[in-house]
Amino acid sequence: MSGITVSRRGDRIVAIKEAACGSERAARLLIEAEVLQRVSHPGVAEYVEHQTDPMIQLVTMFAGTDTWERQPPKGLKAVRALAVVASVLADLHEAKIAHGELVAAHIIRGSDQRPVLCGFGRSTPLSHESEAADLNALATLLDDMTEALNDEQRTHVGAISADLRRDSLSARGATGRLDALLSSETPATPARQVSRGVLALVAAASLGIGAIALASTTGSSAAPPLIALSSTTKMPVATSLAATTTTVLAPPATGSPTLVNQGRRYALGQPGDMAIVGDWDCDGTNTPALLRPSTGEIAIFSDWPAPKVGIAPQHILVVDGAHSLEIDDQDACIMLRVRTANGSVLIPLESI
Image (cartoon, rainbow, N blue to C red; front, side, top):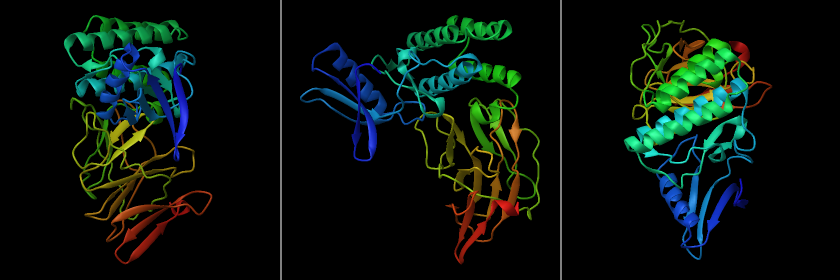
């Protein structure tokens, strides 16, 4: 974090970069400010403001105390984090933006170890050359940060970095292959920690709400069979509203709720639906719940999907006239309050 001042602006903690007008650093800060103003993404430093007089100053939201240069992830945690970096880079490329200097010093070790990209001072519009440079930089990170893996794992990672260098693999393709490696090595964890691509809520025969299916950004992944659940099943609670967390990069279907988990974006449901996340089973992990106001259907999911699989709702119920979901935190486990025109319905976790 060299050359960066951490300060407070009102109730916000921010990071400030400064440079004298006319200097090379000032020119890079202006480029970075221009890029960050066009990007809203959980894996990219969040722009607050910048000024050009009496000196160049760029202000972003404070994302963490260290970068990967000082505190790199190791082992499979590095693979998991690099899969997130590859996904963010893919989103940037789809928005026709090249990072330009993807190095460990420009990846912040964010909250919950989530990587956040910064250092966009050499960013350019995407071209074949600038994309290749980004992919080569990603390959270097893969080589440098996965030395602690076993021989078989290093062989898999080495094949990915080699394909990136020879321009036969995109950042999106690298994301999928890293996720596949994680899925084979740690089958119990990728569902929550390294989910790829976009989630699509697919209509089920009985209620119109079925499985959350993993859908690649190219549309090549097929949804798994749907699981229809009883409309009398009761459903639990919520913790934090996340449906309004959207991104201007590689957006999902217009109007669909968008959730962010571990630095990855998920599009859930259909336009007009509402989504929140909560620790429904009190296991310390937040997962989605979705309301379809047009029908009153509510679905709750117990996990995030792993690569190349789908997940069905754990519970589905119908509340006539339901138009919104709220958090009602009044017990050891949180509760979901469903608002209707005639009042509200409180759905406790214990009733599931």
